Image (tube, rainbow, N blue to C red):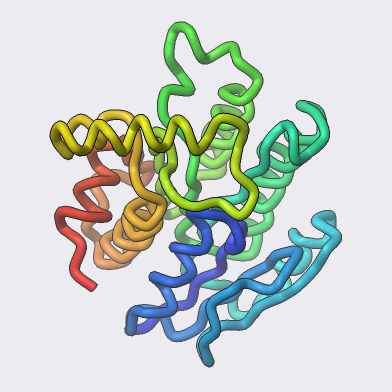
Length: 233
């Protein structure tokens, strides 16, 4: 049975690949997006809501009827783009938490969140970025969705319209490790396409009753396995 999906962050690097993947699969009959600008992919299955005011996104999500089977959030920004940590927190933490709460209240069964690897480590857990991601993860867990899926990728590899500071250099270094052996690259970073596919693959497995737990965490090796090694389009 085909399901419906809603994607938040569909114009970002990973979110765009989640959108492309869902649009290309018969498993999804309708794909909703909520974003500030029009997503690049086009499809008769796409129902895009363009809303520059992010304060309205929760109501936009709540108004989808019937509620989507699964909500994907790959929403995130950078400190520089947001204009400081406080503004980044409003997007990366507050808005993601509000969207998760709205999805749960609307009756969404599965919520998928693209978080980040290493955020709970001894030397990283106190960093503002880590606190944002941990806060969202913990909020999703507390909501007790029928199914929650958390992805924790390493460095996200791929072309960005606005490169992160130092991003192209680091991407080159990580991809360079792949010339030594793919496993070396996989330990530090994953291609955005692989992450997007892993998110969708996990959601499909959950719909089939194959998720290992109600709160399923995909670490980097799991992302590579679901998004590349076991991926079948």
